[in-house]
Amino acid sequence: MSYMKKLTLLCVLVAFASLLGNAQKVFVTKYKSDADVVVYITKYKSDADLIVYETTYKSDAKSCSGIWYFTEYKSEADVKIWYTQYKSEANWVIWKTDYKSEAGWRKK
Image (cartoon, rainbow, N blue to C red; front, side, top):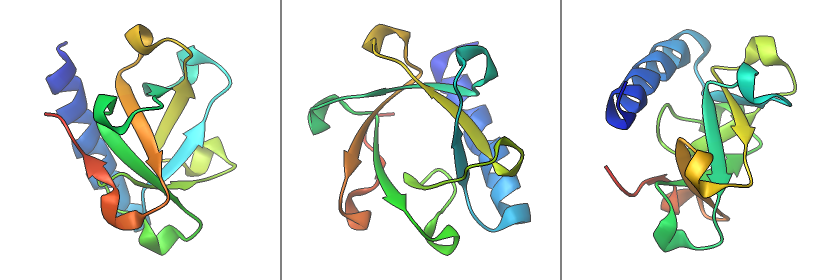
């Protein structure tokens, strides 16, 4: 399955799940095999596919918007991610921001 098909499918699943739970919740797995998406954090905004803002409020999170709410429980998550140290291994390259207004997809 191509990258864009995976991305589209994941966004549809997350959008559906967010309608049920009213927020996009992200869980960080310890194992790559448990993850829906493999994520690499870049130091450079220009390298990112997605700019992520981490919120402490469930109500701020929006599906496929880059505004993520992290949950401690795998069963509560809409998306399970695993962080990699290698950009070539990632499905998504993200850059973290301190500003909610910057969050969102950069490349399509």
